[in-house]
Length: 273
Image (tube, rainbow, N blue to C red; front, side, top):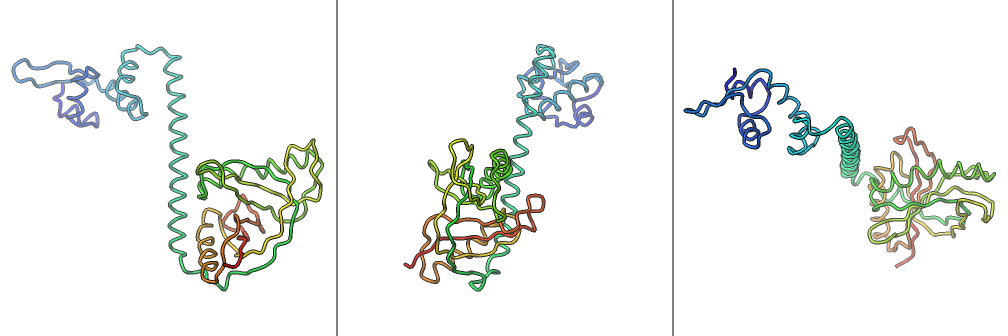
């Protein structure tokens, strides 16, 4: 048999954890010296320890682990528990990936700070345009919220336009935003069309008004768009304008499979202070 120290090393855990598992009845030693209190373990107990560590690593509570190890959970119930935990872990990975992308985008924004100048801003009159659109609600204005909400809308809008026999104009797609309830945002994914609205359409046709706008060309993924929006904001303030409503995004070169090569015109409606 093995001392608690040797067993801990073989099992890849700490002596403290083995004592804790013994205290709660999760993994008791094969024998305990009645005089010294020294614990000793058998080699065949390593399988239980390995299974214990694996289940704990999957996020099960120690109570759940003990039930599984003591065969108090049947095969169907264990399968359901593992399936549920797999879904939870996948969701956690997706959330962590999104947070990592957000942090990286913020770092790129900091690195780009000051590179774009007022010379990149153009003030122009944007003509009115009729669009077909679908909407969704995003949790906030950050790219980590906007992107997942609006990206699925464009292929779905194209599918519905094709089903209705409505051909979008050979013009860029458009996105714009309205405040939603509380901190949320209503995102509009739009394609220019000439058709009027029709009761049978499963999309909305909207006439966007003409706007006097400060515009800036953003190159690259929309995850990095905040740096360009900050440049526009500084220009608007420094030149005595106020923003008027919410900005639009005109996708001049929309490349969903190659977002780093995308080209987007940002349009912020403005008025004199």
